[in-house]
Length: 231
Image 1 (cartoon, rainbow, N blue to C red):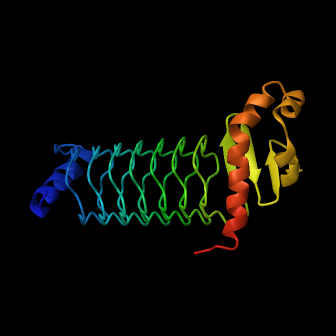
Image 2: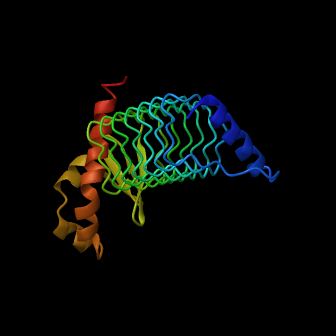
């Protein structure tokens, strides 16, 4: 898509947002490789399956945008607002998301491998089944985030602790201690905890441990490594 066409779509979208006629931006399947969309107002825009590889989206407003299956590999999204955006199945591999706002964003099965998420706000984001391996989550806010079945292998998580919402429990995770609900235990206690023991503590505890113990231990290990491997 050439610059003239893109600017026309953006202008019509701006008018649509202000209810001054116009038209919602439909950039689904659009070729936006290396596009300059810095500070663009793309709230509620349709960017489904758009190719945004290496695009400049610094400071862009993408609140409530539809970015399902979009290719944002290597995109620059520093300071972008992606709160409430739908990024299900999106490819964000190696994307720069420093200081990005991803509050309550849908990132189910998104590819965030190697992404830079330093100081990103991922509170209450849905990261179920997302690939966060090798991602840099230093100082990222993960409070209330759904990380069920997410891959955090080799992720950089060197902040003081991570707060995860795993089903009905809020979990605070340090490199050496873990608190689930109001109970604080040493990491070793969690490593040794069996499904049978967890079931004896609370009905349904066995299934909960089977599902979430790997996430908890992987997060603790990532935090421990991050303190040494800061980038």
